[in-house]
Amino acid sequence: MAKIVVDPITRIEGHLRIQAEVTGGRITDAWSSSTMFRGIEKILKGRDPRDAWFFTQRFCGVCTTVHSIASIRAVENALNTHVPMNAELIRNLIIGIQAVQDHVIHFYHLHALDWVDVVSALKADPAKTAALAASLSDWPLNSPTYFKSVQDKLGAFVKKGRLGPFGNAYWGHPAYKLPPEANLMATAHYLEALNWQREVIRIHAILGSKNPHPQTFLVGGMAIPIDPNSQNALNAEKIAEIGELLKKAKEFVEKVYIPDLLAVASFYKEWAGIGGGVGNYLSCGEYPLDNSGRPEKLWFPRGIILNKDLSRVYPIDQKKITESVAHSWYEGGDAGVHPWDEQTEAKYTGPRPPYEMIDTTQKYSWVKSPRYDGTPMETGPLATILVAYASGHKGAKGAVDMVLGKLGVGPEALFSTLGRTAARGIETLLVAQELPKWLDMLVANIAGGDLAIHNGEKWDPATWPREAKGYGWHNAPRGSLSHWIRIRDQKIENYQAVVPSTWNASPRDEKGQRGPYEAALVGTPMADPNKPLEILRTIHSFDPCLACAVHVVDPAGGELVNVKVL
Image (cartoon, rainbow, N blue to C red; front, side, top):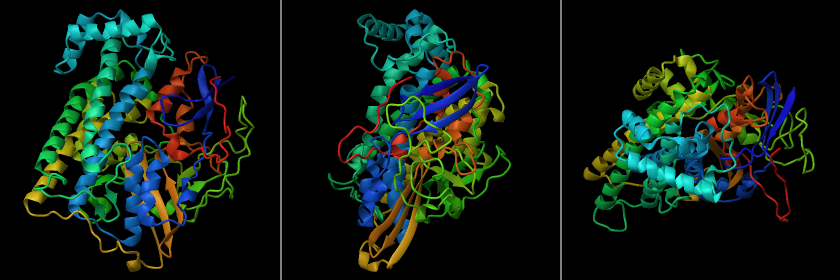
């Protein structure tokens, strides 16, 4: 038996450590550990609930929009506030383009290099690469000249010894299977995606004033006015610009991302049987189609799937959500606690850095262990698409069947690392195709004379009850995000965030049940334990964001952890 430590996992947000045991060329056990501490919940206590969203978006430098909307929805839920439909549609546009941009960035810049050997691209024939790309789509840059220019640029990087983002990888690893031409095509699109994502997210600058950290969310609606006759409001010119950016987003997803995803996946079909994990999936649903707040009015449905059974989708009962600290560095008993009643009191009992191993029989992570009715749940694009597919969502069913058909695999392939990666592409495609429709709905409302953007009935704290509590769901790019708030005497009494990477990166709970990362790694074959590329493939398929799950807080400015790759 060999012991492997990957610390830190790179190409993610935050610090994640994986300890694994390998026997006979396969992982037999694994432990997920974060060495960072989150303390923003404590900072929020005593503050005005209407300001919470501005603080919570600082959980992370990437996931700013998602924490804003979850926080806003938690306060609106506590105060029983319904927002105007225009505000819901603008929110859909903001969070929708965030999802599309985030997923494309993940595929190319965080995950693709687990499957694409960039150095191999130097051996490709640009003409054959162009022929391959042209066989997949009519993207205008599919020419031998273009791919030759990318290859020359890559070669110049290599000659100078400056691989930049392509450095420090396992190039030449035996687990890489793409031919050189496919590697060159994917590398070219990696570079294209850098410019594309910068352009399409300008929608956030139009509707949110800036990105990251949008400024226009507001309890009760939005703070961006609608006035067709004002240059300082949302008008026809700005709506037209948004429409063009949505068109650009949709075109890249349809003609570059999805063809690349299918091309890469076709060489790695064995990964349809690897990385299945806990087999339980939670999706909170997303994109309201009215302002009622009812789950059945969400475009992506809300629900739970248990034991990989797609014949039934269970409703979510928020009372069944708990977080355990049995193996987490916090004070508290072993039994799980509901977020409304939860405290975040740090109690580090791990080894003093630097260290080689963490004793995983004890507490071993700053991430807590969320559970639903005592059961570990995976969340993320796979959960989103599985719940939608099993619920009869027309778009999801058509897209899933299309992907499975092109790959020549059955629905069971979804429960895997490959399925998780494919589901992210499917979600991106569906949202990119739907965004223009939500813009059209907004235009129709404005044309009909509806300019309402904010409901101020509960804005004055004098209208609030002495005590209130609420929760806000958001189906973020990385999965189901929930914020939980208790309000007393017009101030925040308690605040908790249960984020996607907390669900997925959770350590063992009081029953010894593995979290989704840990369970997904068990059984993974390893070609070379000294180059754990296979661990990266499965972990990256979840798109971890440990900055959301935990945060470093050290008022004295001292070193909290010394991280090195072993």
